Image (cartoon, rainbow, N blue to C red):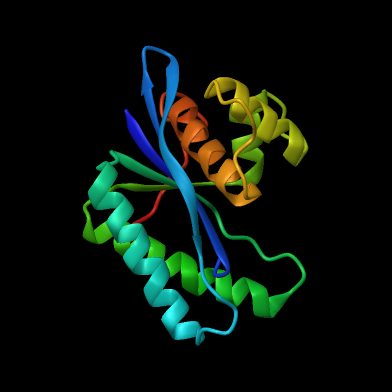
Amino acid sequence: MRVLGIDPGYAIVGWGVVEYISNRFAPIGYGAVITEKDTPFEQRLVEIYESVFDICKRYQPEALSIEKLYYQHNQTTVIGVAEARGVILLAAAQCGVPIYEYTPMQVKQAITGYGKAVKKQIQEMTRIMLHLESVPKPDDTADALGMAIAHCHCSRSRLMGTPVR
């Protein structure tokens, strides 16, 4: 199974493609789409859309795993992230990639076995599972790889993410 994990944002979109065969993980590609703060917001969305579309075409994932959006404190930020998430979902849908969303707790549970693990624990387990020398930077990239791993683990269990329709 080949899964594209995405950590959505509008300044930085982390992405990671993971291959999962016979209970073994292999990183296929990973990185970040970084948009400049001085760029008009609508152009940032275009850059995100085009980059995710290109990633989907290049790596041909069988599924996209993305964090379920939740509201914390800053209403302005959550709206911008939601808009970026929308163009990410559009790009994947136009490439025919099924989309699954997971809560942070589901991701933590799938990677560490503990739903209240801290970010550093998730990133270190991701590094170990993918046999990487160091945790990928920026953090959004490591988080995206974790999203991909979570889908691989959850797709065969009761923790299965919610398909986006």
